[in-house]
Amino acid sequence: MTSPMIKILIAMLLATLSFQASGQFMEWCIADEQTPDDELQRAMDWACHVGGADCSKIQVNQPCHLPNTVKDHASYVFNNYYQKFKNKGGSCYFNSAAITSDLDPSHGSCKFEFVP
Image 1: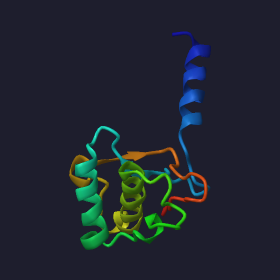
Image 2: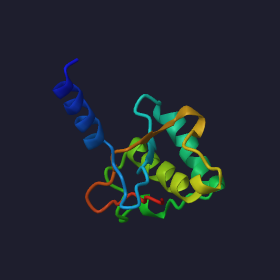
Image 3: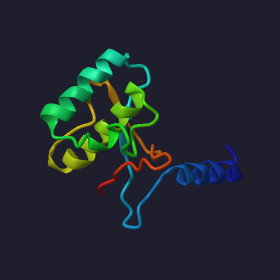
C-alpha cells in the first residue's frame, strides 16, 4: 500500500472509534438481531426480575416503550443491566442473546445509559 492510503485507512479507523473526553471507549449492550424473540424475552425476564435491571422505562407511557418490540425492549434492558454492573463483573452475554456496540442505540426520547 502506498503511504497516503495507509494514512487514509488510519484516519478512517480513528474516525469510527467513539471516545469520551477521558479517552474511554464507549460501549453499549444491545439485543443480537439474530436471536429469536422467545430467547430475548427469557433473557430480559431474568434481567428485570433477578438480575437487577431497571425495566420501568419500557412500560406503557414511558420513554422507551416505543417501538414496542421484544428486540427494542431487550436492548434497553440489557444495556441497563450492563451499564449498572459492568464495573462489578457483569457482562453483556445473556446466554448469547446480546452483543456490545460502539454505536449509541438511543432514539427519540429513549436515552440509553453509558457508565464509564
